Amino acid sequence: MTDFQNVPATATGVIHIDLGQLAANWQALAKFVMPARCSGVVKANAYGLGLDRVVPALMKAGCQTFFVATIDEAKDVRALASDAAIFVLDGLLPGAEKALTDINAIPVLSSLEEFQDWSAHARKCNKALPTAMHIDTGLNRLGMTAVDIRELAAGRTLLEKLNVYLIMSHLACADDPDDDMNARQLNVFEGLLPLLPTVATSLAASDGLMLGAPYHTQLVRPGYALYGGQATKEPTAPVKPVVKVHARVLQVSEIVTGQTIGYSAIYKATSPRRIATVAAGYADGVLRTSSAASGEAGGFVAFNGRLAPIVGRVSMDLITVDITELDDETIHRGSWTELVGPTISLEDAGHGAKTIGYEILTSLSKRFHRIYTGEDTITR
Ligand SMILES: *Cc1c(COP(=O)(O)O)cnc(C)c1O
Image 1 (cartoon, helix red, strand yellow):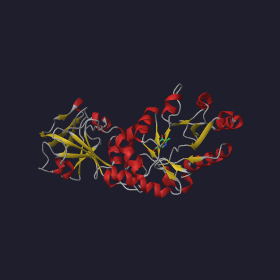
Image 2 (cartoon, protein in one colour):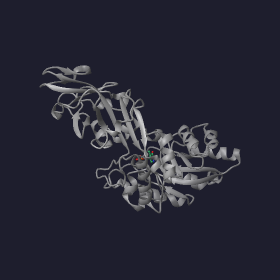
Image 3 (cartoon, helix red, strand yellow):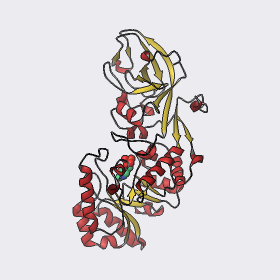
Image 4 (spheres, protein in one colour):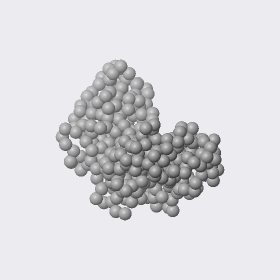
């Protein structure tokens, strides 16, 4: 198991992150959407993978435009990427104007109020500030409404002092290519653009860019796909997995019929069971919703490519898995078990926890040992 050769003896778990594959994923998506351009969405610490390693790898691959959620995240990206364009999806919080201009980050503004504040700041600085605009085309989460857009367009004074770089929107149902919501949102977006300055536009994230060329507009914003995730039923994106997560077995025990396992005794053995206790719990991103009471399905781990179900409650630091059916005498104290990897995809892990792969990534353990590989293989 060469994967574990360089792992310290004290590590209860290890996360392998293949930066070479991350870069290859970005390049494959960039090629796929040409002539549109491709950015990198690195919010939430690059979906849990580590901003400080992900941003340099993406830059080496050719990425020059980043999206983050918060201004603090933008600050971290700026420290790593002095020339990159950095868009802040959460926009302008009251009083945060200077924090944005200090690092030359571009707020994605979602309301007339934000436009008023940002434009007032531009007048104060006597500088045309870089600006992006978010239009809500049906997600009803964040963005300007059609009414706002008309008011903004009619006034124009708000736009005078601003240098609008990008107009964007976000799709609600891009993971289902058959949903008419996609075309409806594209229509609304295209219908509003003539009211606004002619600048670059952006609509698609990871799933949206697989909907075809009309959705690419000038810039796509993949996050999840860069990290190897594919949320659509039919995985069609030209990307491969980037992350593997393994944890160590602490103990293997034999349970007799009638005994229960774990907190609240929600699992009861109806026959003799062989149980491996693994050093990964909800504090390591094995979400507590992966628990399994008797007769219920929960999450899975894998040993040498074969699945073993979690039984009983997931606790903070530990899970108990049923390895009876594997009939594998080689599983012992110190063995490695896969939580995410070639046998259990991000989607599988998300499904086992009654959530999505995105949440598995952003919940990755902060105390597991991390191994980054492949950075030296990245070429443009
Ligand atoms: C998070 C986010 C993205 C990236 O989404 P993925 O599905 O991870 O590709 C793009 N745009 C907006 C507005 C987002 O919030």
